[in-house]
Amino acid sequence: MMLDAILILGKELRRDPARAHRELRARSAAAAAAARAVATDPWIVTLEAPLAGQDQAGSRLVLENLRLLGVPDEQVIRMTQTRSTREEAVWFQRLARRHSWRRLMVITSAYHLARAGLIFHEHFSGAVRVRAPEAFYAVASAQEQDWIQGGVPTEETMRREGQAELLLAGAARVIRWLPASIRWKMEIAAGALLRASTP
Image 1 (tube, one colour):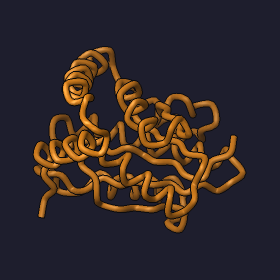
Image 2 (cartoon, rainbow, N blue to C red):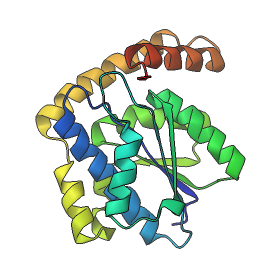
Image 3 (cartoon, rainbow, N blue to C red):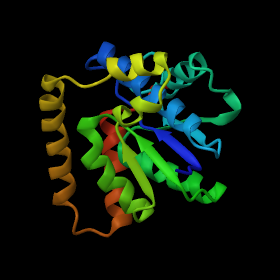
């Protein structure tokens, strides 16, 4: 498998900070393992802004995780721009165009795969793979395996987060008749409203 870039999706920290930290560690570990398993030295990208009620951005935590795993800073693109999955897709698309990336991967938790896949395929016409951290367990180091295992969602998490994902998907279906650019702006505005960036 060849990759140009790997995006680690952010995770809101407010509702369950301990679980969010575990999930971000798992996503970071999976990205490090995936990057090492291919011959192309792909960029690892993290985009999440500091959100309301959080003392730091998820992208900062991801960068710290990657450093602990030995990923050099020069291989990481860290920005603090996004507050929703849609906004992450828009920014990742901009970066892909700027850098002429063609082979892309997105890493998120299992409960988020279906909706994230739909969103990213709207922006990349199927040229992006969306995977859960567990998909990289076999190629991970012992520390990475430990982090991946620690971030596996429990049945209760899958149920609770699955309900939230269904609500968000339902809201997106309500406005699907609108032109894509308008829908995307509306989703980004809603994400900004719900999770306003901290100053």
